[in-house]
Amino acid sequence: MAVRLFQSQTSMFCEKVRVVLATKKVPYDIVDVRKDDRKSLIEYTGQRKVPSIDYNGQCVIDSTTISALLEEKHPGNSIYPDGASNKGLCLALEDWSDEVLIHANHAIRRADTPEARKKAEDEWDVHFKTLDQLFTGKKFIFDRMTLADISIFSQLHYLYTVVNYDIPARYKNVNAFMELMRQTLKLESLSDSFEAKSL
Ligand SMILES: N[C@@H](CCC(=O)N[C@@H](CS)C(=O)NCC(=O)O)C(=O)O
Figure 1 (cartoon, rainbow, N blue to C red):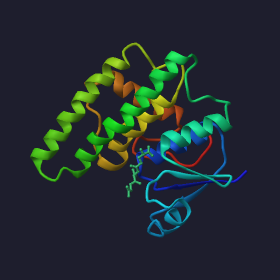
Figure 2 (figure 1 turned 180 degrees about the vertical axis):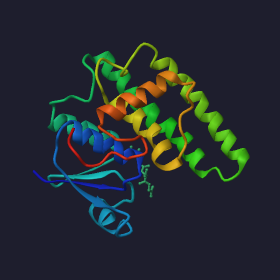
Figure 3 (figure 1 turned 135 degrees about the vertical axis):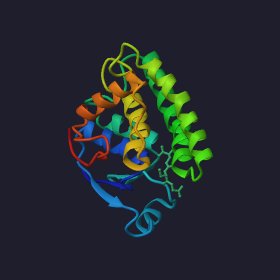
C-alpha cells in the first residue's frame, strides 16, 4: 500500500487528516507542498488545495472526503460514533467546524489592527461559549474520540500553533477538552503541531 499526503504542516485541515491517519495507523509519506510551490500537488491533483491524498493511485481532495475514504478502507478504530443518528450529528459538527470555525481562524490570523483583533476575539467568544456548553459533563462529544472532536480540535489547535492565542481560562470545559486531546495525541505542548506518527 502506498499513501502520499500532500500537505502543509500548519494547515488545520491537514492536521485533521494526519490525526485520522494516525488513529487508523495507516503508514504514509508526506509531500510538503510549500517546498516546491505546489508544483507536485498541481501536477498530481490539477488544483491547489491541501489536504489532497494519493491513496494507492486514487486521487482524493478535501479533508472530509479523505476521512470518509480512510474509514471505508480502514474500518478499524472508527472515527465515527455508533448509530445513524449520532453519525449524522458527528458529520454536522465536522461541517460546522470546517466551515464556521475556519472563518474565526482566518479573521484572527488576518487581524492587523486592534479593532480587527477585538472583533475576531469576539467572534471566537461566541464559538467558545457554544463549545463550553457542548462539552458540559463530557470528555469527548460522543463516547470516544470521533471526527467531530478531531475537526474541532484542529481548528482550536491552530490558535496555539499559528495564531499564538490561548483559549481564555474561563472556558473551563473547552480547556479540559484541549488538555484531553493533548494527552490523547501525545503532544508535549499545545503549541506543537501533530506530526506524522502513529498513536
Ligand atoms: N474544505 C477543505 C478546505 C481545504 C483548505 O481550505 N485548504 C487550504 C489550506 S488550510 C488551501 O490549501 N488553500 C490554498 C488555496 O486555496 O489555494 C478541506 O476540508 O480540506
